[in-house]
Image 1 (tube, one colour):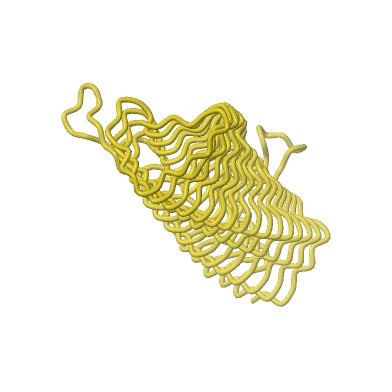
Image 2 (cartoon, rainbow, N blue to C red):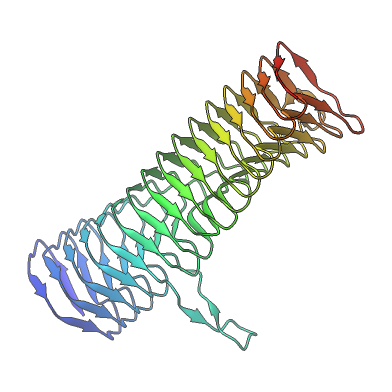
Length: 390
């Protein structure tokens, strides 16, 4: 292949760099230069590797079908990647680790669709390879890229990585658009994330900052938070998803505020199985099922939201929802919300539920404002204004 090192600055234009036994292009120790309109493919390692302060510019290259990542940035590597087409590499389209901090602008990162035959199997199965994989304290700034059509997740962030993703289009992945794990802390700003299984999936102490994104038309949901993940979700549009738009369980504890959550084919917000979280100043409306459902020891704090225009009902608490390990000190709190114009019940308290419902305005519904029914249904209701319900 090609090695760039020690302050060099060559220009490689319209070459084919292929089928090497190592990396196609290896930039190291401050190496630079311009790689433009090259076809880099079929190499036994990465298509392009950037390390130890190297800072090349990659412009309009095709980087594909390599046996590791298309572009591998590690050990404080830098680099500027613009308008490249990166696809069908074995480990990831772009992989960023170990403090590497490249800039990716206007690239197409697509179609991670490799297969292999696992031991003991006869048929090939898809390789778990994302278009973008940032982990092990990797950084990076990714803006205005199209990230699409992986057989796995679109973007994976883990192990204390802190990339910035802004104004990207992330769509048509078989699993999550963005998957955050192992303490990953990305910042997602103004991205359009659509047509995946799940829009953003957070597990294992992930703490993303997700602000002003459009997250829509997913098969299952817009946001999943579980396995003690958290994160801050602000000013996003979450709409027209197939199942619960927001699903929080198994110790998930996000802060969600000023989001618009609307138009889904199921529930707007679902909290259950020891899910927690604070949900403040959101507008949750026009879902085909309940706008909000809390069950099985879910204990969210839902405060100052507008919850309206559901085709079914406003808020449903049932099946053990409302208390955490039977503690009256930790419970589902529905505080200071406006709940109105739902086709069914405004607030329904079902079997074994025990919420605190306080200082809400519950009005203009097409059924009862509050409905309590079922074995051991209880709860505390105080200071609410319940009026103009049918």
